[in-house]
Length: 309
Length: 152
Image (cartoon, rainbow over all chains, first blue to last red; front, side):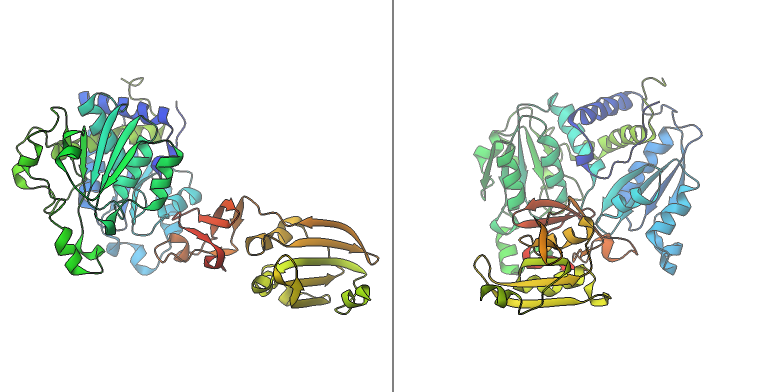
């Protein structure tokens, strides 16, 4: 049996572990109902609501034959009576083999790993980390491009606050990837990540212009939402909000293999006229989350799915 | 005459002298070492002339040799500090403080969304740079340096 482990951050995973998880995700896509978790109980503790992520994790467990306990509304638990996170984690640890948790506080999942021996999967801790989102992004890129090396990834929109782009950038730094960062000055990629790129000899460009040239030279276009509340000056928001909206006509000269990704939910940054273009991939991307999460659950439980076939 | 000036604060027969503390960090150093509740003679001087720092602070603690793990705490806010161990009025060792790799429960994370601000738990920081001293919270990963480092 493999060692049990927690996954709190994408940084916890080596390149080899990421590749192995992607292989397992591909395997689960072929065998989504493999009843490998018979007798296992998994907790999904959602201290803040996130229906999309919770349903994906719970579907993953159900399809693997495991059982689920947990809550999706902390108002109905002892947390609302003032119970500490430590006490909740310790209590639940008595019952389960794995805890999937989402929390509004940054670092909550890391802290949980320090108070229990039960492995933890971080399903989002505030604006901090959300490694299963990164794994499904990676799997979507791997699946659509057939590789993670020698590709060009264009990230568009909110590159300042968007944790998904930061985690994806860190994960892809294991591979030979060229990045284009497209954002207005208010939402450009933070300096620490630009420094990270330079230190790791990662090829990148930065621009404010979501240009034809950038689009036509991309293999992946990763769109994110530009949120109104991020702007101190609403006039500035009105000026930039439509500059980073993708319309179908903008893809006319794009590569055949290009795929449009988005962590969802989208508002207006991808026009609905893109939805029927075969290059639109955001709905399949969400589905890939199921397989990526099945792979992560098995890794954390120390189960090799192929050996238990 | 120079010796006489040195002795103006107080001569120490046996104990510890911590020198070259930046003036603005002196009282933080006093707190970090828990000297407010110390039973032996403690002499504190501040804004003394210093070639290296402009002005400096100095702490003398009688009859006490600190554990390195304790004394090195002050490297967080006074990385220039030098620790002299005194025996029979003579300096028997003189060492710069050295910052540990991890700082536990001495510094506060001021990110209001960090779990360490809300749970009854110890704070934990990793030292990511020694010059300038930069600490990263092990929970939310926010980084702090200079005056942004707040003691608990």
